[in-house]
Length: 189
Length: 152
Image (cartoon, rainbow over all chains, first blue to last red; front, top):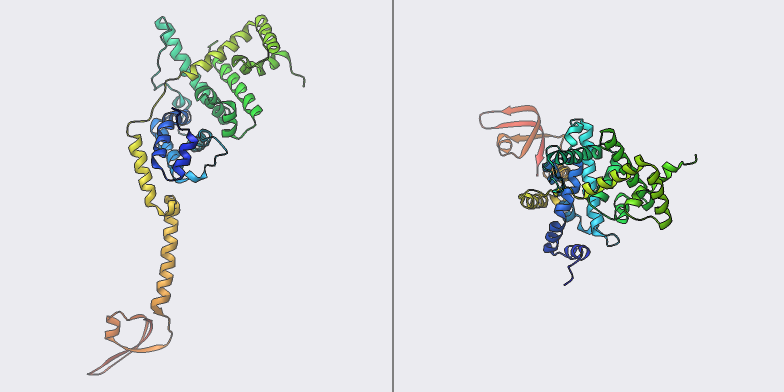
């Protein structure tokens, strides 16, 4: 049996079906949480912004028009909240780069790391990779997160960030180069 | 400014690791990699980063997330017409202000005339005294001359 699409769910919700809203929340809460937390790095804050995102879906359901995919619409809302919060955070200047790292988060050590030193290197690389990501300018960071972590298509990213496809592709490429250069500078080659 | 080969190759890295290059471009790219070990390790570094990022441990919201979301939605409904807290507050003030103006217009007749009144009217809150002019009293009466606003 074919699963009901997001677009059908939002349409049902626009017609007053609250169960469709609940289904959309279930479908997107984990994905969006992982997206938002890439910007704010604090789980409680990310949760708060995620709630704001779903609240906006609830109160502004009719703002969605079927010309775009539902996923791009909801990612745009979440991204706007996350980036606005990040800018406020930066203005307050209360964080350091180390706060942006994933040092305090659990990482799954891949089984293929055969020795403790390999495992240590793998964790270190992940940690530094996230540090390098967090140092990217926001416009580069957003699209590399959408592409390499959220694994959205170039077309979806282009809609979300409102940039031409070619610009998105070249920015992703440049973002990847910058991250790798940053890692090289830290001794990961 | 004319791009050198390295710059051109760098613009092709993403397409290479995502396998979007044409056959000819791919061959040229791999040929360039073969002759540039540093560039090769750079490309493989990017490829590795991509796989690390896509396999990052998935984090999920806390178990209270849905309960909290529900509370937020219920609280939001308490605000008027779906307006947020700030707008609701401003809107409330405007409504109260307009109401006060209306009440003032409806219940009071402004007057600069001097009114002869008795204590009783004032005590019964029928007049709002602006200025007391004179008090006339004898054994039986006490009459006040006041500038007052008379309530309807």
